[in-house]
Image (cartoon, rainbow, N blue to C red; front, side, top):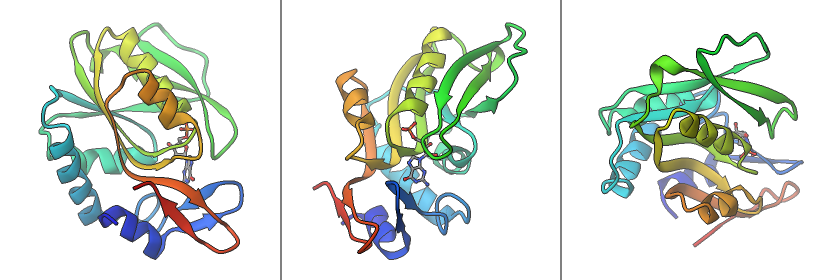
Length: 192
Ligand code: 5GP
């Protein structure tokens, strides 16, 4: 097991409804040392990619992306979730359905902060069905920028987002892939 898998086994809690709760180190209380190790790992895995910007999505992605960015020396942009439809044309937008909250949000990025020619590393905490990633990819495409890679902390391999994103040809690096988990026993099985 790698360092993140070990931490998930130690502190993660499997909830009903295919939810893995990791709020003691990733989603609420934040283990900055752990994020730093994740950044080191992604810097190695993406060392052959050209990257000049990191894009993430609020809220849980922001803390991770900021620490990770220290290993790439690039700025972080986060997509904002907005219920407002009053958009003035100065924003790239995409619709994202939240897996955890079961609602739909517009996500927006100002045209000021994403430009054609940008080579973007997407960072996020979880990959489930891939809606959040597809929204971010759409925003990058609208800007005429390109996706250099996608770094995910925890991929739930029993949901189909990872397969969809890999089939699209993106360089996806998930630090922990959960292939099965059981809310009644708490057991978590990782992909080898
Ligand atoms: P997707 O868009 O891939 O279906 O879901 C990804 C988003 O849903 C992540 O950004 C994350 O915030 C949230 N999410 C999905 N599954 C889980 C989970 O098991 N636990 C937690 N804490 N968040 C999740």
